[in-house]
Each structure stands twice: as structure tokens, then as C-alpha cells.
Image 1 (cartoon, one colour):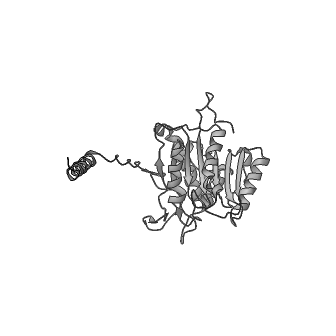
Image 2 (cartoon, one colour):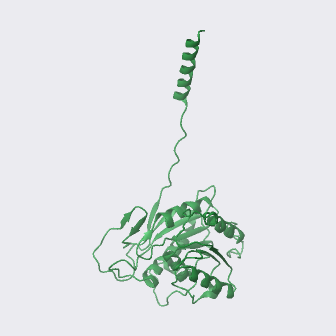
Image 3 (cartoon, helix red, strand yellow):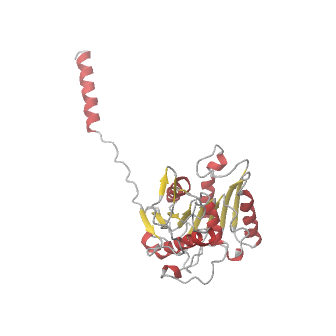
Length: 301
């Protein structure tokens, strides 16, 4: 066979193989479910005309109907742990992607089901809401909702934690380390469940709720912040010291020469890039990834 004919046959074979080969099927994106926290309307007084949420790029604001977005862990990796995530944003907006949805997918890789909360924002112009009242109410309701629907997601209701960034970290402290306001009537069966998280994760948390007023009953805590964070280094250290002195299990990571809002992968410092690994280690060391004990109690820290 002449060289030109052999070359033509080789090209034909390659083209035939390329035509029959198939690209791998694209991964099916998760089906996200939006859950209204208060089907009959959120408590409190908001007399403003109805208005839609506003979202741009990485943020969302104008939250009138608090809700959760569910990110269930895949069945093959589901370890029964759930985390409710409170994004930050100074109570003016929610940093929805970097401190919400991206965090949820990172937790999914650990086998953890995640629920990202859209809570009411107290610092928006004209807002009638308060952080300690309305936003904290939304946070407690979110935790109760997850416990009420734990069986639907393969979640152990005794292994439901909370995780908050910056302003969201304030909500963590308000519901985990401080007492719930007394005298509020239960609206339904969900409201009668416990709103105390089984563990708490605070990522560069703001100062609200510190010093804590119910520290003796606080759940185990993982705290991470930058040592040069002008707003949130001091409250992180102060809360840790309160927890430590009260005998509550707590772990603190203060990263050198680092400021605010480093999130998951927004730093050129190797130590900060690996802080989610330290969280995974902490959860594993605390027994949270293990099956619940037969007694029905949460893992011991």
C-alpha cells in the first residue's frame, strides 16, 4: 500500500473512532428546594407594601419571606449531620454565594446536608426588623424546621448544627450562646421543638451576642477568624475564652496577618485555604460523623 493510501486509511479510522466515541454525560445539578419558614407570614410587624427580593451577582437582599434552600447530602455519603448556614453581609444584604451556596456544596462533600437561610435584614434602609428579634427568630425557626423534617433528608435530629459568617456568626451566637426570649407563643408544632443547635461554627463572627448570657448551656464551638480583623478578631477571642472558662468544648483558629471575609478560597495564605479541613477534622474528632449512640444523646465533644 502506498504511503498516501495508508495515511488516508489511518485518518478515516481516527475519524470513525471519534464519531463513535461519546463524551461523558454531564453531571446532573442538584434539585434545589426553597422552603418557606413561615407559611402564614413571618411574625412581627412589616407594614410596607409587598416587594420582591433583589439579587445581583453574589448577593441578595430585601428578604420579606424568610426561607431555606436545601442542599441534601448524596445518599451514598449521607452521615446524618445537618448544618444550617447563615450568610453574612452586615444585616444589609446576604453574601449568598461565597458565604452560602458554595459553603453548602463544600459541606455536602463531607457527607453533611446543608440548608442556607435567607433571614430578614435589620440594617437595610427603611427596615422595620431587628437582629436580636426578627433575624434571630428566623434562625431559630430554621433550626426547628430542619429538626421537624429530619427524617425526610436522612438527618439525625440530634446532630443539627449552625454555621454563620460575620453577621451570620452573630446569629449563631445569639441562638447558641444566649437565651431565647421568653413569652413568645408557639405558632405550630415546629415552634415547639428545640432551637438549640447541637454544635456551632462561627466564621469571623461579629460582636452581637458577646459576651454571651447563657454560656453554660452552649453547644461545642468551632471559631475561625483573622488576627487582624478590625471588627471580628476581638469577639472571636472573647467568645472562645468564655466558652473555655465555662468548660464548654471549643476550638479557636486565629490566622496570622489576616483580615475579614476570607471565606472558603479567597486568600493567598495556605493556612486559610485549608481552614475547611480543620473544620472537618473538628467534626470528626467530636464524633459528629459517627452514628448516634443508642442512648439518643449527641456525640460527646
